[in-house]
Length: 334
Ligand SMILES: [Zn+2]
Image (cartoon, rainbow, N blue to C red):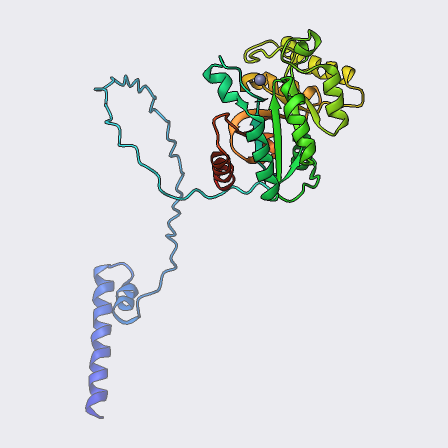
């Protein structure tokens, strides 16, 4: 026997002794003790599976009652010190209007062509151009290559694109003084020119002294002069009723057309240059194409036909003055 076999024999005997003791003492299941000592520890099935059932019972009851009664007590009034007004030097971007038609056409404003009476006041002198000065002016226009057209021709050009001659110019005569026939008309014919005459119909009807007659008007119209309306009796039209303005605007047109057969009155001239929005509305409704204002300038557009700009010709003008102002307005932005 080897020593090892001896050792095993001794151990077996020792175990038998122990079992014998255990049985003798009456201990329960001595095999368990043996098993605990020898056998590997059993692997238990993991029966303890924790079933974690989370019941989401989180109910938030909004208890935030909005009872915010904020009484905003007005605090002290803040006073702003105004900033200094800035002077804009930026060049404004031009708004291009495709429907805008512009023509730089001088429309000269005359009144009387004659020799003022010795007792004439400053206004009368200012409104009266002598026949000699007038002829110098017509000669100057011819020399400068101007071509006279009528106010209605300008309106037809602006509104409908009707052609105008080179260097067009319009000569207008307000009030229908008798010297329009006696002085202006012969000189216009002499220079083969046309013009527009604005007559006050009631002055003609009543044969008022110093004013044109219907016979003279008819003769001028037959010679190619335009006859326009300057109202019934030259009132200030501003602030008047539609009916009143209509009688002045449409009534005078009907009167001229009745008295001068073949003539269609197309343009109007505001008495003393005064008008309002009603005046323009009535003019449109009455069939006028344009109206002469006393706004100084030569820039005419299709959008301002009822505010046609003119250049006032004063009785005090020398030919040099006349040429100067015609040139000045032509080259200005007005
Ligand atoms: Zn007038």
